[in-house]
Structures are given as C-alpha cells and as structure tokens.
Length: 95
Image 1 (cartoon, rainbow, N blue to C red):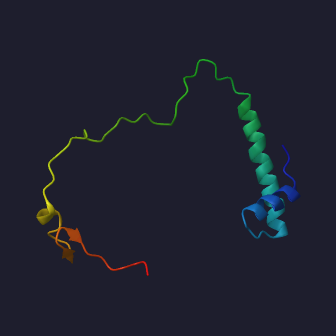
Image 2: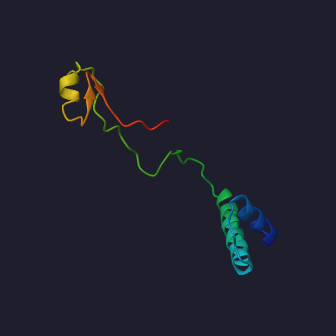
C-alpha cells in the first residue's frame, strides 16, 4: 500500500507535527514499506495456532486480599507533619 506525501502531511497535521519536505518523502517511503509488510503478514497461515494475549504467560503474583483491623489514627497519623484530631492537615490548594 502506497502512502503519498499528502497523506503524510495530513497525519503530521493531525499529530500537530511540523515536518520538512525531505522528511515527508522519507516517511512516505517508510510507512509504505511497513504497510506492505503488514499485508504480507495477513497471508500467513495460522491454522492450529492458539491465540495468545501476550508473549509471556504470567501468573498472578499478588497476595490474597484479606480484611484486617485498622491500626487506628494514632498509628496511621504518627508520622504526619500536621494533624487535626484524626485527620491529616494539608496546605490549601484551591482558592
């Protein structure tokens, strides 16, 4: 599939890229080559190949989610720079 210089200009405009004329010609050739390769891949026989979602099979490595009793505000706020009773005190960010 041939990508024209005009199509590269449209793509560059949509991506808000400023590309000089020499690079547009180069990109046109490179994108055409990539799309030709993808067309070649469309013709590969994949009968009997199991679909995979990724290159590696991963298992869940997280621990089980179990409920625990809260340690309370004295423990959770022990290192807070400022606090007001059982709450963190932070600088105001909205005026």
